[in-house]
Length: 406
Ligand SMILES: Cc1ncc(COP(=O)(O)O)c(C=O)c1O
View 1 (tube, rainbow, N blue to C red):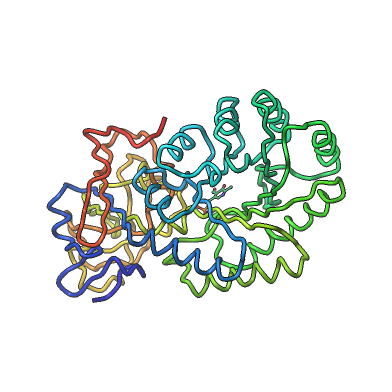
View 2 (view 1 turned 90 degrees about the vertical axis):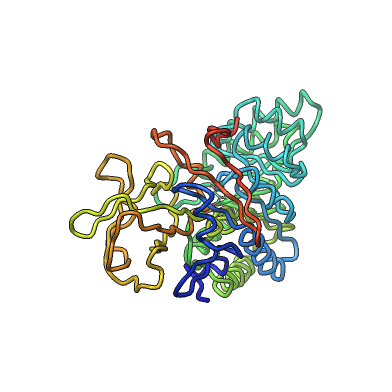
């Protein structure tokens, strides 16, 4: 059988498609479309490749899954069982990670908004590090840590200097001075790491190098004021695993190691926080054509409310009903939000015949689709987790109502 979308867990021959070991037609019997599927084996494979590649090159490498990519509990549980830590931005995620059994010392908390309650819970639970995007947060953390009579380890999120990026601390003269003062004064924080996440979907070394050169510059400035950084956190930003095959990921890992050596960057530990790489290609939508209009435009029964552009997924579309037919005819694909802006793809190579009711598989939708989804008034899909021959429903809109976390 041939592999679809570079994903070994979605295969086709002229007659049928199988999803892991389950015939596609059996899945269709379980629910009306749209259906969302997650492939447990793909998540595990992605984690194992990432760990093998980075673990072979970096002695002290640690991985932290970026929960915001997809915080469905069943997905996070799989990641936890592969002994990956958690990178978390808010209290609901922290509560979930703790409930799912992520060890406290494998949890990194951080983001542009650190409410007191989040800091309190983080300090109380002895999370590994709090990542600070704004120097004023250091005072808040220090004061809460003081009340609890502990010293909290801190990571400074530096601004990656990517064009127009507003996230993280720009270490200019003024902020270095401010940091120096705070570091001397605040006794209940200990700055031990820096983090720089450059962008998402980074598929070439140039972007990773840009990130590292900013890290190198910042380390020099920090050393000058007596802050000795132990750990480097390079964030996430890797494309879906099927889009960045192991060979390419290995190249990036080797490139990073070489660049760190060339820049004379010493560190005890190196952290990565992949989101998309672990889960992006583990998700697929099964949807159907609900309308065919002029100029080869088709409408699917999903749209930007559940498959948002913001998610930056490498979307691939397959006409499952005509899977044996060549996909070489330019077709534009619209979603169901009543706005001309709801376009999922333009001039995408698809089957010649376009029929209402044709089932369409959309791949690479495992990361950021659910988290960036919105409350446009359409029903949410049934969501299933597939592993080998097993299929289990992990989200039922009529019972669960919503996949938000509180
Ligand atoms: C600080 C940080 N780490 C990790 C990630 C995960 O990125 P990706 O899913 O592209 O790997 C993000 C995403 O925005 C981020 O902001």
